[in-house]
Length: 84
Image 1 (cartoon, rainbow, N blue to C red):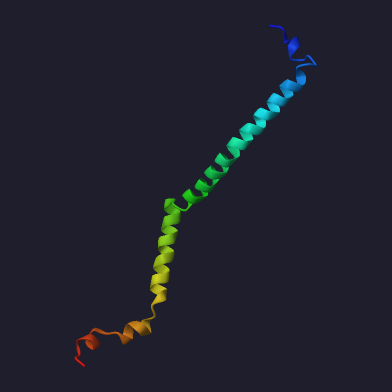
Image 2 (tube, helix red, strand yellow; image 1 turned 180 degrees about the vertical axis):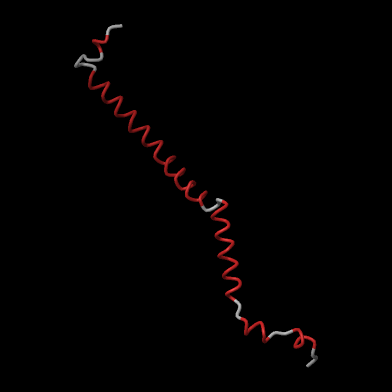
């Protein structure tokens, strides 16, 4: 095969423009896909067993710390049974 056509000054601008155009088209199509996959990867990190366990522990801590002992002491079963 004769490679002299690749280096012919008449065809060189067409070859360069084709390669640049192909690169731009590939970037135009692949960058949104890459960004979508990165977002999905970040969301998936929230659903790992470690992250789920951490959220469950945080939820349990806020549930136990959210109610005070004084509020529990005010509401006793004896109060509910007395008629008014």
